[in-house]
Length: 213
Image (cartoon, rainbow, N blue to C red; front, side, top):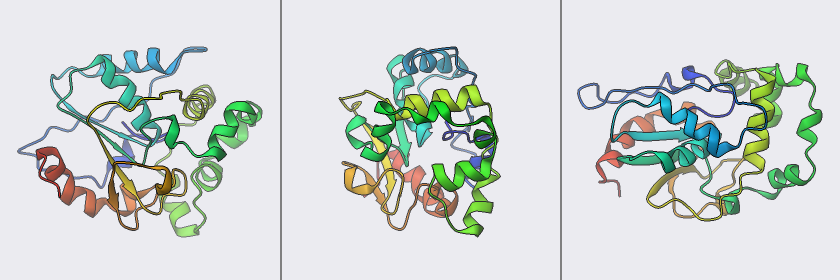
């Protein structure tokens, strides 16, 4: 499950052994008006037809994947650059729940991938800005405002059992100091799916097998 506003292209550098795994990339569907994240997650599970899968979610996709897991029997649930409960969401995002200025964000801002990357993901360097913005292919304003609202207002208090959390120690969106019980990727930022893909390609199969140390 890709991150907020990201399309399937975000996984282009992730490579797993073809003889062991069939990879299916889920894509965002349009949310209904005032749809809850739980209801949305239930609809997303209709896209999964295989039994006993390993479900991986990135950033906000990790939040949705956790809600999806409530309706599925999974082999493993893995989140990357995400959070496991409202307790791990930083205050700077939580404040948007009380002061929902995102409702006032103009359409031209949401339709610009460059502004989303620069201000939403905290990417400042020109090289990384150009690198990441090509992966944000979802610019539907209904979906984006819904997704932002669900992310900052996620109310899960209790972590889901057995979720495997992979997180970078340089993540500016979800700082590592608020994250507990995770596999730490040294130097990993919020976009480490791209910048640390070699680490992920090496270690994901080990994590799948339960042999990561």
